[in-house]
Image 1 (cartoon, rainbow, N blue to C red):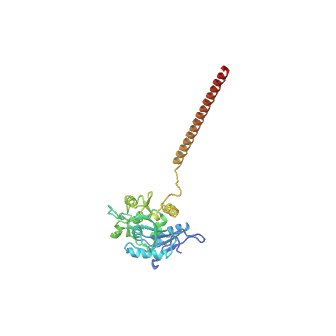
Image 2: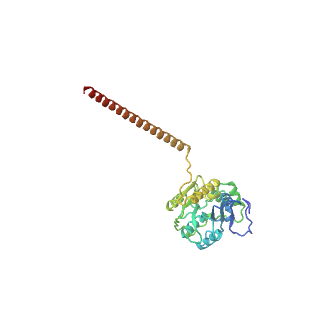
Image 3: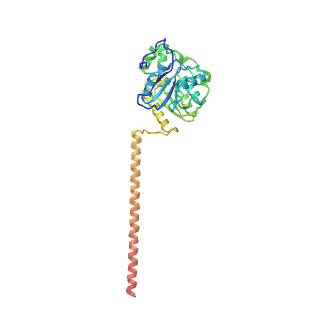
Length: 312
């Protein structure tokens, strides 16, 4: 297995890369990663190792933006194997995110896709000044600034002979720009400061998908799975996967409340409890008053009967 941040030599053939759950741990699902423009499978080694540590089998595929839909499907099905551990999830970045959307929408029986992770999707509509802006820092530095703020990942890309620089300026294939609405659950992750694809496009995509959850990485850039907040992003992916495993309808397993909200909820519960106690006391008082009135009436009745007896 290649070290976490070792770049493959130029002579290394680009093949699928896999990371498996630790020995003795039952696999919890299968993730198929589709890289974006300029990337290759080992770019997602850190992500693959982290998800594998949580029990998931991760396969990063050697797909390219220009691949035919049939080729993407065939490679994904081959990597997953004839009997993949469910749920099978497509994870795509940049143009790979668009390929994940289209592959899931096709609903081919060869690949039983149960959900997709759309990470930093490439733009599907023209964006003013889209692409990597060129400035005095140089083309590579400005591309890095658009991709990631993570120093470790910046170094990896800089030293990586297989990574193709400048591809973020390459046009997105027309067929990937067409709309795809898969019916499976989708986790849409996007950087709030992505200079390649505006956050608004991710919001619109999430709104169009029938079962989408949108996660916005504050100050995040384009390579959202390999950005400075990669640990948080990976954790969100795991939480989403666990929720999908527990309930395909997407019902939350756990809800985190802010301290202020929790305090408000506690105050509301205390007020409700006090009101309930007051109601109980009022009911008890009314019951006692009613019983006292009944006793007085009974006493009066007995007095009348005694008086009547004396007269007779």
